[in-house]
Structures are given as structure tokens and as C-alpha cells.
Amino acid sequence: MDTTTHTHHASRTFAATKGSWGEAARATLHCLTGCAIGEVLGLVLGTALGLSTGATIALAIALAFVFGYALTLTPVLRSGVALKAALAVTLAADTVSITVMELVDNSVMLLVPGAMDAGLGSMLFWGALAFSLAVAFVLTVPVNRWLISRGRGHAVVHGLH
Image (cartoon, rainbow, N blue to C red):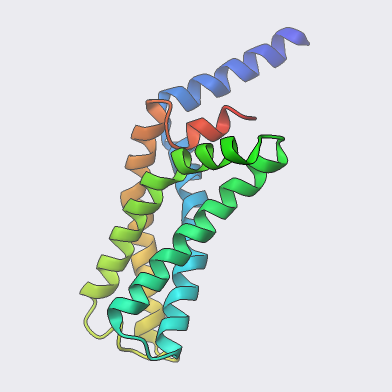
């Protein structure tokens, strides 16, 4: 039984070190969840408040980082890691991924004609937002795979489990 547990742990560590596509997709989905919450909230608030496109995007990016970091920080703190160390782990795990995701999804939103000016009741707005998040996911998976294969990104968080 001890050998089975050890083998399972070793294969999981190897998969994370190797940077499998599955591990990268899971890390990206985690990142996407936090980014999407912040992105949607920021775009909805900015649009509803009639903010300029630049102010709306800045709000969406700020909230994406807040929610993205919060989704990593909370379980790291629950695992017993001190706040300073938990913040360092969170920043190491998520900064590159969130940055890439935000660059991609906001660029797509800006490139879809009229998407940023469409109202909250518009299919154009919601369709462009869904499309931008999907494109961001697809383009961020290889980034996370590369990070994980080098023991960075979400590999850092997995080291705490």
C-alpha cells in the first residue's frame, strides 16, 4: 500500500514537472475562472456606468487580477502557509498566466467591431466576451504548459499539496 501511494505521488509530480497538456489545461481553467469573474464584472460595471473604453478595460483587468489571485491565495492560506509566503506563491503561480489571458481577451474585445460600445443587453457584447475568453484560454494553455514544465506557474502551487 505504501508503494502504491508513493508511485501515485511520483507520477503526479512527474506529470506536473513534465508539463502535460492536461495539467496546463487545468491550470489555465483555474486562471480563466478568476479572470472571467473579474473581466465580466469589470466590463459590466464599466459599461453600465458609461465609463470610457480605456477606463472599462482598466477596471476589468484590475478585477481579473484581484479575483484570479484570490482563487489561488485562499486555498494556499487554508493549507497553512503564512500570508507573506502565500502571497509569493500566488504571484509566482498566476502573474504570467493572468497577464497573457488579459492581453488576449481584452485585445479580442477591442478588435471585435462595436463590442465595447454594445450595451449589456446586446448579443454582440456577450458573444464577443465569450469568444474573447475562449481565445484567451486556447492561447494561454501553451504558456502554462511551458511554465509548469519548468517548475513555475501552477507547479509552484501543486508543490504545496
